[in-house]
Image (cartoon, rainbow over all chains, first blue to last red):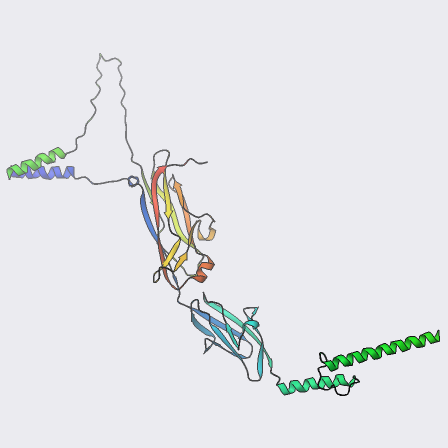
Length: 188
Length: 168
């Protein structure tokens, strides 16, 4: 009897245990998730190509390949050779000469790896004595045409002596023209 | 013990499903008419399977990244019904180290190499194979100003069995 009862119980359990089978649409609405992610680097690698005979440092360090912090503004220090001065700086095709202060050029905020093409033009520095000498020579040249004997230190282009010489020349020319005209009138 | 077993047995029997069949129609020589109708009915529950995009990692400095596809891969829908999938997103990833720092993004329809200008918000699907390709867009300007670090955001796809909107 006992066995019969146990068998009945087992049979009833088998037939009554429900296996939940929901259609997908029955849970309404259902949700699903997805994660979007990315990683922004801490640093960026820069390469420098230099055209021109100068020394260049990035943030005070020599070299042509650098790693700098993201969104930082690295400073290029450009130093011309002794006896020369920088007259033009072109960065990636853009003339940035005006942005160079005391030989330093601040780069824009770095947001990716990149290559910087730096092109620098230099010229020899002429010292102040030779410059004065040169001015003097030009003034003397002008004074040769001048009626004023003491105009040697004046600038021929902008100086007072130059102005006087020019005035004199114009005056002489005017006199000459007037004379010519007078002689033509006489001939007539 | 015997009583307990008997009780349990009775309970089990009570819980058994009872199938009730309609009384069969009997036709004999005196029946008029000599025919009967039988209605066969069945009910198929609506069912569908929608696949949604997987987790996606965007490569640094990439403006358009394939996010995957929303697709109806199984559909037993009632007439006039549709499966509507809506996207819930705040359109910005948060920096893991500093939640104040964020990186904006937009989810457009289309694949990364043929992205459209249509921002995905929701779509309805009625037949197996109906799908929408999605692309994650991060503008160059947003990349340029993003602070360093790991960013992430979780988007939610709400899937709803709904009345189909008639095509206009």
